[in-house]
Image (tube, rainbow, N blue to C red; front, top):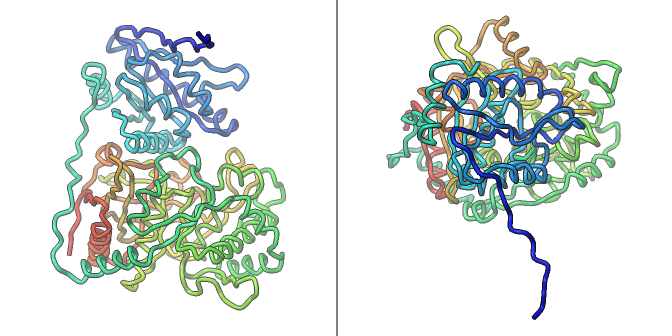
Length: 546
């Protein structure tokens, strides 16, 4: 009889009563983990104190690593090792005070058998709530049950009642009464438009170009071909190395012409000389080359939309992609010709760009671009981080921000309302300009395409971008990321906690309409298009279908 060396059976420690284990998924970038660790320490102390009031102990599943100086799980391999120390049936807390890479912990969460609670700080300076939304969306995509909660200081009665429910029942119930399935749409020009555009997409198909998938651990932002192809969308998988190589072929004078066009339009840049901490002309030139290169590669492959991952890979080679991303989404933008100079690429059109290679936004941006264009509206669309918010003058006003850029038509002054700031060296070592500004007041349609139960869904809603006094805008900007553009948004019929409990992404997509009635028409057309494609449509908050 043959004798083989068999592995020892896997073993895990036994769980203890009234004890929860705690983990914290972190960034992949060491500088980011170090910067966020003091905030994480304070949050964990507050959580431990709140659970102690209920007679529960909270045990960290891994100690602080003296070599790195923090206790974040900072890689997928580390996550696998940490979960070996966690009883498979133990109550588990995933505590997030910072942005986190979900794939660091998804393997362990996928097979964990005990109740899971995700918790975030609701603060502007450290985006724990953004990380929480991304993690929640990842678990929803892979069908893992979880409870979730958030707090400003972890002492409020609502938070305490939530964790009491979790330790007693293993669940937290949230109010989701703002969400309803789409009713049967009545015959209308908007319904007819949506159905016609959907049928065109199904018949003629479309290609989205993805410069490397899986940006920043966003498992929720990857949509499998088996879900995309049935709605007429196919991927062209591209390498960021190809983008970098194409950038090398762009002559300096072509790049400088892009910069001259922006300055002529009124955009300004906060320039300095220190490459390590300030925005410089050299960084801008590389960003202009990226803009040109992205258009030419998109032309090569006949793309209908394009997404650049950037924040892993290219961040070590090139200044940030954000400037190029925002301009691509704008109809009015610097002209770029084909390599032979014979054609202006996407002349007078936006090329939809989905920031951070978020494929949920790719689907949404493609659809939005076609509907808004057909309706004669400005099709400029962008994703935003659901970053933070506070009450102001009796209503909850969200801070929406995206990592560096929005299309300039979202500002009241267009390019003249845009200022280029250097990206934070902690996250962007080679710098690069943002497109900073304050988004104009107006009516918007917001949306999110996501995966749940092995199928595509979309949440649709209405909101208003509003103006706040300059001093309040500055306070909110300084409380978050001052270099990034900001939108002050008020959801229609959706409270802070309803949105947090429901939303299946760290991002949402927005597009403007000239007035409320037109926004309602555009939302109706969008609902009709998605329904015709076979995507499950959910209406969120107060909406008025035409």
